[in-house]
Image: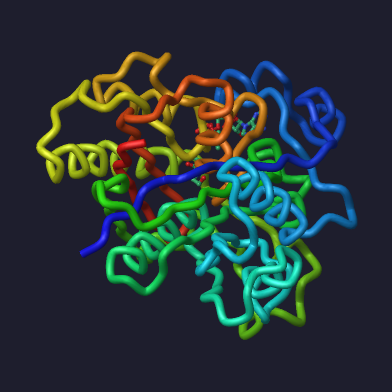
Length: 323
Ligand code: UT7
């Protein structure tokens, strides 16, 4: 079996920043409540004409530039998103022409909500391990602002738009050490966008096309599940608490993130947190956070990174990476 290594990272955030104060004018909330309960101070919001593919394209270009790679160097493109440009073709297929990739590359989207990036990374890793691809561009991109009910304070304060990307490639030494994916649909109704092409498509009015969440119940499942997930990841690699250099978590809520860091035995300065400035960008949040910490010099080559996510489905997953 081949190994896959993390070659580069990239990201993109839309220009417009929405501060908590702006939300105070839309719903009955306060900057203090949002900061205290979630850690969020602001989020980026895509311009009306910006699509998921627009954000993904910029993140991809940023990862390709960081690696010094051109369009002919990519064999595979996976986009994790819950807010794609259209039903089909996939957002990934649409990016082939935009990025000028070779005709014949492998390209598809992955839907696993906030865990989508970890799912996409796991899949691309397996393609590289088995020789199906030599180099893969893995993107998480979301325009969640389009599926928010801006009159629902329990959800609209939480999310933002953005995209992050990584390039992984075949290597002689292992970089992606293990991946762990899970799902259980039994509590689907706690967090969903309850419509689709074959269900309620014709009745999009009345808020049915928007995110619906019983946050407090999701919170409790998330903390418990992520605690077990990091234990599973450490055990699979014969590691103990404190052995990981960086936690790069899905950025849903600072309180969930710190509980996971505690479970890992890590001081908070070893947890990459972008939730304050980005909010929850769903499948984009991990690659966005990773790219920020790589570019500002915190994450160094050779360090051990634990990526983890929990999201609608429920889905959850982790990846342990020697960067
Ligand atoms: O990314 C995918 C997975 N998603 C998550 O992991 C999100 C998990 N959930 C959470 O992050 C948290 O549950 C929330 C941030 C959504 C909510 O925080 P909480 O501490 O669980 O609050 P709560 O839902 O228990 O609500 C506490 C109070 C309620 O008022 P009462 O009943 O105590 O009077 C809510 O109505 O806060 C109220 N509330 C708000 N107040 C001001 C709910 N939303 C708001 C708001 N502003 N935006």
